[in-house]
Length: 188
Image 1 (cartoon, rainbow, N blue to C red):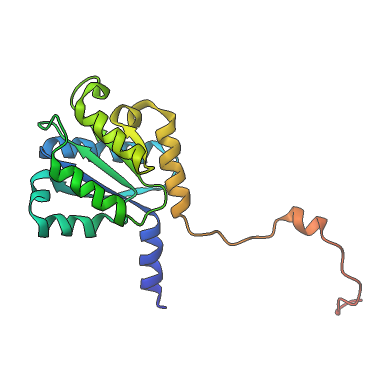
Image 2: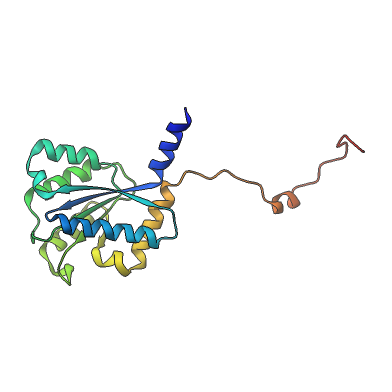
């Protein structure tokens, strides 16, 4: 394996993937910026690979399949809908397909709503039920701003993606090890 391939594999393991389903580009940009702020606040050198997908793309089967193929390894699905107040059938169908095909350990879902109390919206409630039904960790948008649980989730994702560190003997381990017998060679 060459050095470039090894470096690319290491970088892909250090990046968290998020898919953002949106109906308003500015709102999707705010959701992506929120993820970046979480990455900065985490005491890790983490980075997000954010793939935005416009909601109306999911109506076209070939484009919905392309979005599905691109997101099967996403750590986080973000639904950032400003103009859509109830979950459209194409979104719910796409999410069901994603839940079956997803290949990530412990994926999560976040709903980003413009309302002050997102939990009161039909969209938020339905997506929370979906997440519970499929065993996804559910994060509301408010969680990523203030809740330590979200930071723990991001930290856990990051730790899972880190390559294993080589075991380096410490001074204490040398001190605790049995002393070898004589015959060291020079100057005995």
